Length: 125
Image 1: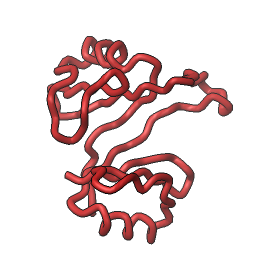
Image 2: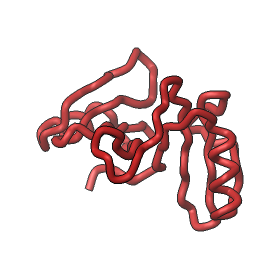
Image 3: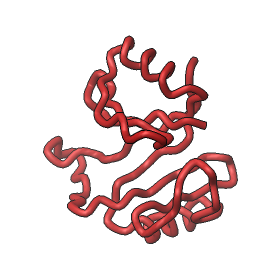
Image 4: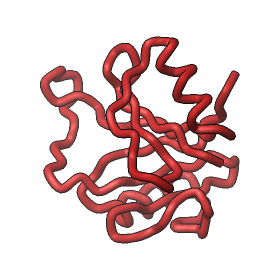
């Protein structure tokens, strides 16, 4: 094991609105301050009472999934907290991941695709 799941991130047209919807469903706190990410018009979070964190990311050209139509699939990605980005990157690449965005110097996350092409992030914690 090299990581812990930090949150599940859902693409959407209005992050705050979707965070409030899930708060109504699950309880918790919307946009609680957290050193792992910045909150703005493009990113909202929900810290649930049971420690699960959901995050909501604005997608300007968002098209909702249409179950079960594979041409409009479900849209989300996982964020995994790791103590060392370089070491974790080497490990996920060895397991078959590919780099999508290594980010700029100083950024605390990098974006990868799993072997099936699903995006996920490694986030320094």
